Image (cartoon, rainbow over all chains, first blue to last red; front, top):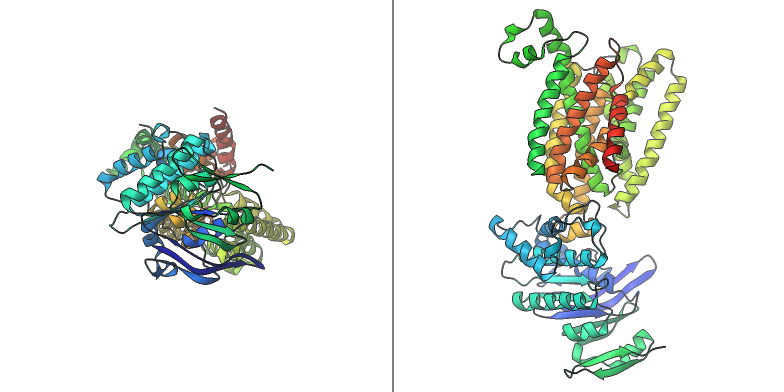
Length: 258
Length: 327
C-alpha cells in the first residue's frame, strides 16, 4: 500500500497541496479527480517519490519513500507521465524494453514481458516504428506498455503500484476504455494498486473503485466511487451535474451545458 | 543486419585507416611492410623504423584515441543534455583547455616550457571550466541540464574573451603558437605527450560504455529516469566527470578538434538508431577512423606542409553530413 499521511507541498509562496491524506491500495483503482490546478499531478509526484513533501510523509509498505533506494522503488512502482519528450528516435519496442533496463528480468522472460505489455496497450503493430512518427495517443499507449513491462519484470510476490497521470488525455474513446480495461485486468491479475488522474467522470465511474477529489490542493471528497455526491462535484467544479443511470444501472454524472 | 554489418565494417576500416596513416606521409613506406612490421621487423630499413617508432605510431595512436574520445563524449553529452546539439565544447572543456593553453603560452615564459607544461595547463583549464559550468548549472541544489547548457554558453564566452585578451597582449610568436594550438593538430604527437593521456582517456571510454544503458533510460527524461530506478543527479555527475577527464586529456594532447564530437554520433544514429549500447562503441570506432583518416589526408594534401586536421575534419565531414541529412 502507498499511503500519503497529511502531506503538504509548498513551492515558494504557493501551496500546491495542503494536508492531503490518501491511500493507493492493492487490488483497487483510485481515481484522482479535480479541476485544473487542484494539485493532482503534484500529489502523483509525491506518491511516486519524485518530490518530497514539505510536511507529512508518503510510505510504501509502511516504509517512508525517502528510505527506499531508487532502484528498489522502481521494482515496486511505475509511473505513466502526462507527456514525455523523448530526446532521440528510439523505436516503440526499444522504449517498452527501457521499462526494465535497470531492473533486468531473466533474459528468457524478456520477450514475453514485452509482447504482453505491448498487447495490453494495443501497440503490437507499432513495434519497429520510431517514436517521433507516432500520434500523441500512440505515444501515450507506448509509455503505458513501458510501465507494465517495468512492473512485470519485477514480480517478486509483493503488490506493485502504477501511477498514471491523465493516461487517456490523447486517446480516442475506444482506446480510453481499452487502456483502463487493461489497467483493471492488470490490477486484478497481479493484485497491484493503481492511482489514475482523470478528467472524465464517466471513465472514473466505470473503472475506479475509489476516488479522491481535490480542490485547491485540499481533499474535497474521498472514499468509494459509488458514494460520490453530485453536490460536492458542483461545488468543486463550479458547474452543474446531472445524475443519470445507464443501461447497466450504473450512476453517472454528466456536466450540464453552460 | 545493419548493426552486425557495421561492427564488422568499422573495425576493418579502422585497421585499414591506421595502416594507411602509418604508411603514408612525406616519406612513404610500403603498406605491406607496415602490415608485416609487428611480425618481422627486418622488412623495414633503420630509417623507416625510426619514422614509424618516433613519429607515425604515436601520431596514429593519438588520432585513434582523440577521435574515439571526442565522439564518445559527444554521444554521451547529447544523451545527458537530451539535446542533439550538445558536444564536448558545451560543458566548457575545449574553451577551458584553450584558455589554459593560452595562459601558459603567453604568461608561462621560457622556464615553464617543458614538454608537459602546455598539456597540463590545458587539462587544468578544461577541468576548471567544467567545474564552473557544473557549479553554475545547479538550481535549488539540483543539477539541471538546461541551466548547465546556459552556464556552458556563458563560460565559453568568458573563456573566449580570455583567449582574445591573451592574443591581444601576446607577441607575434606567442600569437602564432596560440592560433595553431586552437586549431587542433596531431602534429605535436610524441610518446611524451601521448603516454600521460592514455590512462584518463581509457578510464573515460570504459566508464562511458558502462553507462550506455543508463543513457538510454535518461533519454526518456530525468523524472522518467528516476521512475525507472536511476538517480539522475549521480548520472549527470558521472557522465560530466568522465567526459571532462577524457576530453580534457585528449584536448591537452591534441588541441581542440571540432566537428567529430558533434557530428559522429549523429551519423551513427541516422544509420544504426538511437540505442546507446550500439551508438557509443560505433561512435568511438567512427570517430577514430575519421580523425586518423583526416590527419593522413591533412599530411598528404599540402605536403610537405600540413593542414590543421580540425579544419579538414569539418571540410570533409560537414558536406557528407548534409548529404546524409537530405537523403
